[in-house]
Image (cartoon, rainbow, N blue to C red; front, side, top):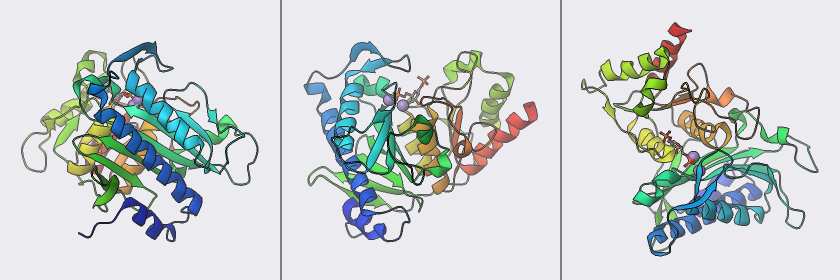
Length: 333
Ligand code: AHG
Ligand code: MN
Ligand code: MN
């Protein structure tokens, strides 16, 4: 395949997408630059004394890793200056971040998880940055209100992630399919490596933290048991895989098919994952790739968050596998 850089791809598609204005292309470009900067820091982490925790706990009640903080700062610094945004929301920040008056403003809102899977960092396991791009409701001017950010996922203009793994990959969608780019570290460019990614209709892998079994409802146990007992398309049982980095577990699901699940449990009645910065962007990608994303009852993309850090159960991946989960929960309802 001829080498198509992400910059070339964005410029080529700028004309075709209703959202892809020069401002929007610039936003994606700066997002990619932030991702490359984070990738560089992660690659050197073991050498620079930036592994481990900061000793602080974030707004989610989780231990903050040094790289969480570094990735968060890189994103906020770069993206506040990109000229396309009026506000941002980060998993690591309790409040909405409004672009300060000294920087140029645009109509877009960026929601992100600067480093997903950060509890895996010290073990050199894949982590990633997840992003969701929303647009300010038409005509709104002045200071951004929280309500403008609390949008349903169907209204996302674009979503994606940068996966820092054996290779650094950028996977995103602007609503015209899902496309994957791999970073060529020699030249520092992302090259189109996975055009038009599609999730198989049914997979052969289920992915869930089964350590939560004793806290699950009878319905959730039935869901997991279904994957223990149902033959996969190959006739063999489903395999179990769980990295513990949502972005890595999702990427595998996108490539091979199957299902990733973070169900509700007695300790976490809304599950663990954040709707705006984790579930919603990945749901957008899943649907664009021909898969499904559900909270067990219905479509994630139709759920409207009631607060910035609202959580939601997540079942995401191959359409048939997600439908099987919804059918089991419906029987228990
Ligand atoms: P983050 O590192 O951004 O806080 O997200 C952690 C999330 C997600 O990446 C992963 O799938 C999930 O937490 C794992 O949770 P458990 O350890 O409860 O399985
Ligand atoms: Mn996360
Ligand atoms: Mn995170």
